[in-house]
Length: 564
Image 1 (tube, rainbow, N blue to C red):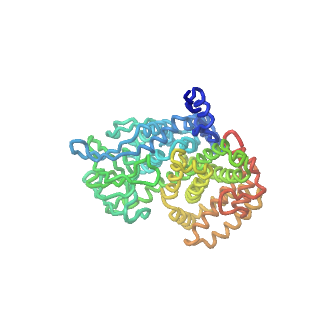
Image 2 (image 1 turned 180 degrees about the vertical axis):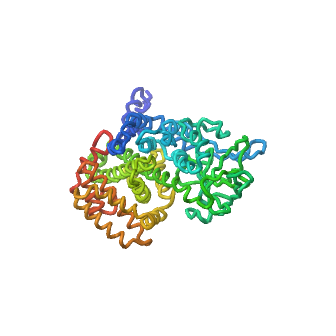
Image 3 (image 1 turned 90 degrees about the horizontal axis):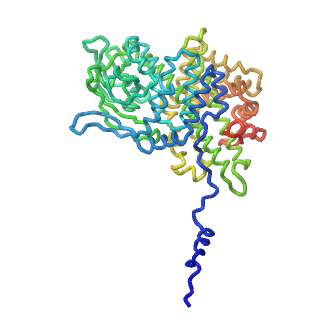
């Protein structure tokens, strides 16, 4: 009689395979999506406080859409399938077009329809700019790259208003809520997007060294450009604000891709940048050679003309960094809630809770400051700022926020990624994409040094900015002794302000301002831990080093969706 091995006997193989299976998946978190990206107390409270409570229903609806499996997949696909440059058509004609994956267009269509481009400029409701910022804070949970063209479109409108005849033509199309990606005569489209071309290879942020030239034509206000731009984002846009050297000095110009007669303007894209992050978005080096452009503002006043665009896009840098912080905090919180190690869930382990609580403080401070800046911008541009205090506060606080919040982004994202351990280091988790994105926001619209020096410039040339900052800080006077001491120290630092110490000064401004906002508006547990760690020095050099007095349970209960 032949003996049959146990593994070959009917029924035994199945039993053994179940007992010794090698691919049972345990102790892994379920997918985060769907989730509500607007489930953030700091965000919703700030929305109401800054005058846009009327938008809460829309923000909550957009938050659910941003956290949907479909929208999250769009974000992943748009970054996996990067834009491709097509310089010529099959017949050899120069076309200079950038092709995108359908997911990019889905993301853009929603963003424009939800008013995240230039729509607030056509919205008479107080708080419309705050509502847009809040929308960016939730829709940004999908992916960051498509926020570039929407941001520049938003920022282009106040610049074009320097040239009323151009604004009359283009502003209604820039403020449209219709996304129309086809390259056609601008006035024949349902909506437009705007890009920006300021930097050149020899100067970067030092735009006064630009060598691109602009020569007037026989037609008043029309010029021809010749030169090469180094980092022009969103080359697929319809119109661009460009700096060039006119006979009267550095000037600002509007450059359309398609001219009124339907012909292509000379906008030759030499290559797309191969970037660290922001890979869903196309950034390019265009060459101008007889390129037709319209003067915006006066000759020689290019920086003065375009500075409002910079103020707007710097706010968006702060917003995007705050969004990235919140997104990665949510991802980390979700992971540790469902993952166990050494006999306990990670969320229940004291050291992990301290790390998350420290991140939560940083995230809330960033979000709260972002919405305060948006409120100041809204009141300043609407003329609701009778004495100019909000405009002065916006001027200095936006530069301060741009410096500090964007600087905190990379360290924050790295710590959130570490909460996932090796899982976070794998591309599929999405965390590497967020980590690669984080440094951009400190570089875009001026690196840390540029913004720190801009704060010094504001203090020396616009004395009202210091007054506005300290008036804001005074609103919390007497509420926390540590904050009062920090304000006194800050006043002392101003008396010895120097270029070498600019970063130290601006950092103290940012921390003091954030603490002031949290003392006034956040729960006691948040404000107390922030002041103890960031102002009073009871803090280490890495996240997760809060003092023992920090109410970690209260901080996490507020910060994490579903509580902690």
